[in-house]
Image 1 (spheres, rainbow, N blue to C red):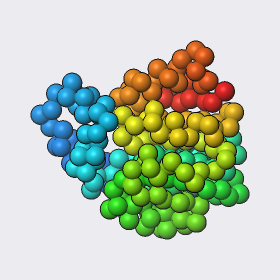
Image 2 (spheres, rainbow, N blue to C red):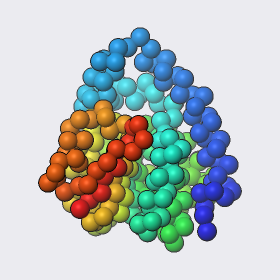
Image 3 (cartoon, rainbow, N blue to C red):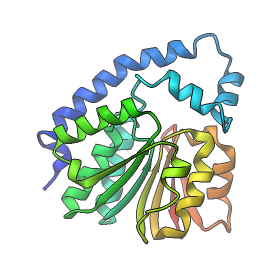
Image 4 (cartoon, one colour):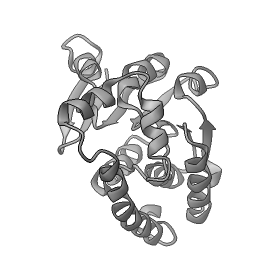
Amino acid sequence: MNTLTQSPVAPLLARLFEESDRLRAEMFRAFEGMSEQETTRLMQDKTAWREMYGTLREVPLPVSPEAGRLLYMLARSGNARTVVEFGTSFGISTIHLAAALRDNGGGLVITTEFEPGKVKKARAHLAEAGLADLVEIRVGDALETLAEGLPDSIDLVLLDGAKSLYPDVLDRLESRLRPGAFVLADNADYCPEYLARVREADGGYLSVPFADDVELSMKL
């Protein structure tokens, strides 16, 4: 069984990625005229992210199709049952993760999103995909929503929210990562602190960059 490549999931994802490409032009307009240095500073600021993501509240910020398939493959190959996601957005990556859990026989994706409007759209997309029963969406600041009520063992983590918060979010999850658990961080180059942590020789992870914008780490 492969939920990812069958209806209703496959045509839904194709539509959502197409809509995302079109709407992301708004994101580029939001950053138009901003220097690379200023963009980096904004992405790395631990407080400015609220204003930035508020500006982009109508814009989907998904992983790439390739990263989405990688998430599905990692979850399937590891027979994942418990997944935590930081940054739901419109639910595209969440659909990939939940599809893998469906094909693994069940489980739970705990995902968190700061913008209520995005949560509404993500819920609708998950319902359309027939995967809503596998997902718990927590609304609010991830440093609060992921501070409690987590499973004892976590098989897979996706970090795809405010980049400056990656180390803080990992702090809340790290003790629950089972040996062999994967952590995929999107656009991790914007958080040198996070990269240094997972790439440290004795830091407890084996880590490698994937494509141009993803860091894939395995808990040792």
